[in-house]
Image 1 (cartoon, rainbow, N blue to C red):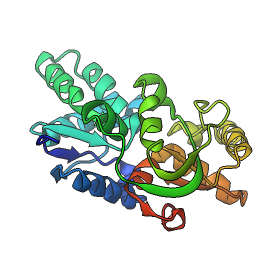
Image 2: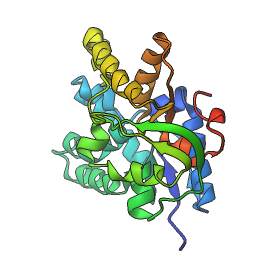
Image 3: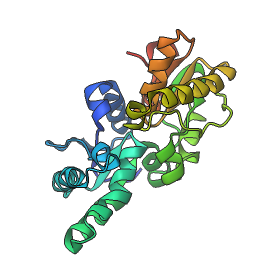
Image 4: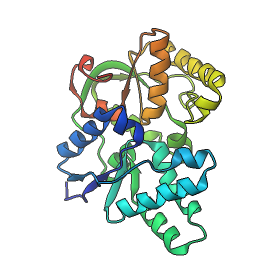
Length: 252
């Protein structure tokens, strides 16, 4: 493999505060590929919660900070489709009346990728030498699948994981009901949606459910634990970095 640009990790809030092992898994993956990694100091929330709640000035402030932090990054990789969508599609909107900042947002958006998208579409890598011996199903999160069009890439990577049996669930792209602040403002609807998602997960007989957005997986995990359901949750980065039995991965 030719020398690749240094990867700047864009770690979403939930990974940073609650699932740091997902970030560690990403570092392990790039180390395995001999790709240098950096973590730009000072990065914070991308501003998506504020943006989705209609607080455009707060979102703009967070976006401007993001642009300053990552302005010199060659490639920016994030383990979250929703955060990548925010940077690519909504940052230019926030600066639409400021041409210089809008162009800067567009340039940075063009070099911001979701993890599996970068591995498959840019690096051309599908086999990372991973092993994960378990029946696993895959959840297509909304922003990732509908807004970024990323469906094939995660499956291409999972298909090369030794020992993993991928069992597709019915309606894999049906929303799990998290939706960030949606689950806070409409908890009854959110709960009904995640229960339907869990029904389709359990119907596969899979031991694990995986995906590319820890926010969705956190929502599924919380409800599954509340109901004592026999399914575990693991981010795709953890599977791809794993070498050994499935019992040692996920839910650390």
